[in-house]
Length: 144
Image (cartoon, rainbow, N blue to C red; front, side, top):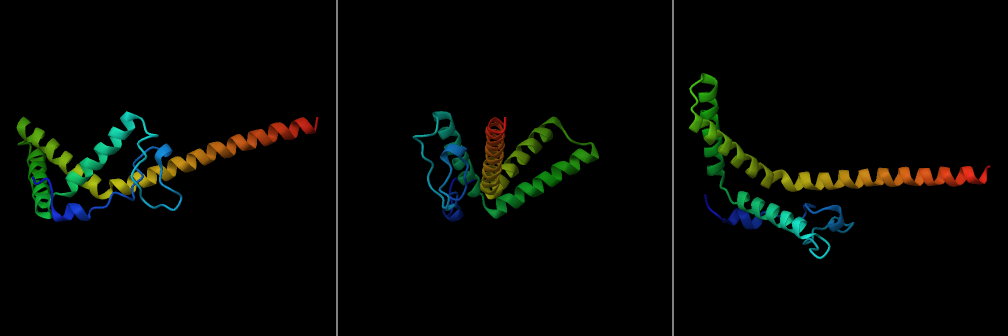
């Protein structure tokens, strides 16, 4: 498979908050390169690896995707007919993995953004609970 294409250059990862909450984008939602100074080395490597993998998977042409889908279909037919060999099972696993990578390249950034929003709401919930407990603690002191 090819490593680059015209389609790859149009692929935009800038809107994906794939970084941990400490490296999130500005409140405007505009994409920015992650601040590697505040990320650990492992986090920085994970972010870079995820982006590189998505760029690579995004370079796959529509014809190649269709070929993978056809191959998966044929392998599944073999499986359901009971004619699947061990080599076919391994190939099916690989084809599924390839299709998952392609899907992640197309939808992964959106899912990362959704995950970041969920994390922010969970943090808000913890903050509100803490605030409530603090208010209750201080209000019961004054009334005693």
